[in-house]
Image (tube, rainbow, N blue to C red):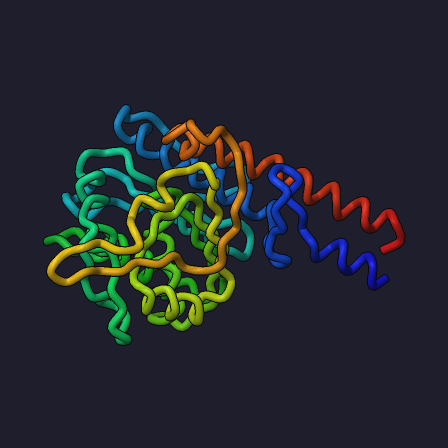
Length: 280
């Protein structure tokens, strides 16, 4: 029995010979990366004025919009399935989002009282309120205040991964709710103080990234200047590998993460079945 327990806990990624965190659920991660993929389809459907729905099994609750204009571009959505609320944040597509990505200077994180600093563009996109148009942050928190009995899971890809990290720690600290965050291809979101606070407040957190993906390293550890700023990733890292070293931003595509998570989920499920069959 002890041998079986070890086999179950040692969730091995046969794709790239890395050992996954023992609490990492690849099946859940696959469900979440499909939600991330759907967030891009949501934007394209809005732009083409076509009907959009989240993946099968999920029920759309709220559409999240960017704070720049009332009814502006979608930046994600809230969906439900059974007893869980899923908050999904989209990655960079539009020019204004590239501008926010480039704001690598830091600002004080307005919803934490520990002096944490975060990337200015990510913070603005998450927290900015406009006349007659509440921030995405306000929309999410208000919805969760009205639905207190359900579990909460937050996810996002690329820019959306950093928004998921901001949202996750905000939910944990401001609402004092347990939350699980699974992000994909997140750049560095904040300084070491932010990462430390996040780690304490959101222990159920998994930062999935492709080792060939350039985006997780796109916000540098040190941004030089008259007042240098420092960045560090939040815990806990889940490295995977797909694509080729010279693939550049092709290694960042959401489609690659979807395929990799599907293979990993299938492998993890097969490994668990084999352990049970062996006498678990």
